[in-house]
Length: 453
Image (tube, rainbow, N blue to C red):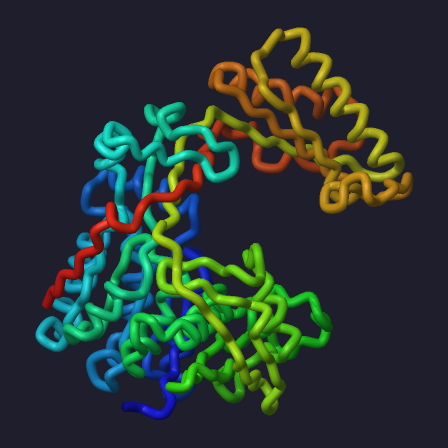
């Protein structure tokens, strides 16, 4: 058993810095590379891609990430855990094997593919059996929007990832696992933590939560002393140095930018935290009030004292569904009286929309540069050098939204003066994808692990 296991974060979302995975494996010793790609809305995007082409439905950036670190995997033994599989983990694995063929590494690579999270094809049967999948916010049954559902995925925990690692997988590809499981699984596997070692499992979850957003805990998007964070252009992504007793350090590679401090780690800890006493995951419920942080050196934060308790008998299900259409348009007004001009343009546009009798469920106006971020908390001034009018509409009627997109451009000539930019041209009509959180009994979700070579 290793004394210390180093799990490096290389992606915090689909679209993160493409250089990060390579920098993590080349910057110093690491045992695992953790790549987190999935947000709730990402699943619906990937489901649409899969519907158009059954060979897709996964985070395609992952292929380039693996390509950039493949020698580290095949020659140094670095292992990768990623939820890049989206709604098509098997297709993602095939793409990696094709890459291995191209790089002459096919016989050197073993993949573990975790499936079972995708419930889309099972929804009708589940509802018929009395599982209502009620919205956790509104308590409505899923049947009210069933005909508009795009994707439905249960959040899996660390156990199937541990199983894949135990079967020799050098790269583990999952669908919708929890973000925290991607880091916790390697620690649980390497240290052999028991299924009921609640404090140790909770420590793994907290470690995963701290690094799941990549550089957000190592100086990126950090409010504390933000103007003095060094060399963000070369920011170092975080690494967990885990120990068998559940304590761990958060560090980054030497000679990289950014900063790891108690403050930066604390800011990440409160991200999406909810009740600090009950951070619920499929593996364990972690008590964030027990976390102890200590600055143990430059760019080194020690984490200890974490307590956990048994998980619930439910899994969370992330469901996305069609919820109408929207369009967002902008116009920029220049000084003098920039805000007043933007306000008049908004008034004129709304009056014209009313006259058209469009079926718009909502119209939202923001004045970027004056009040968009803080709304009524800030008293608008009259001397803004420029203000961007940003106006958005939503409706179940696509034609009404389309007509709105044709009403913005005329304001350039027949509205208030001093329009300096018609950003992006005519607004684009987009389908709204809404989020439906629900719970399901764990016994109804059947994770599976496939080994591919």
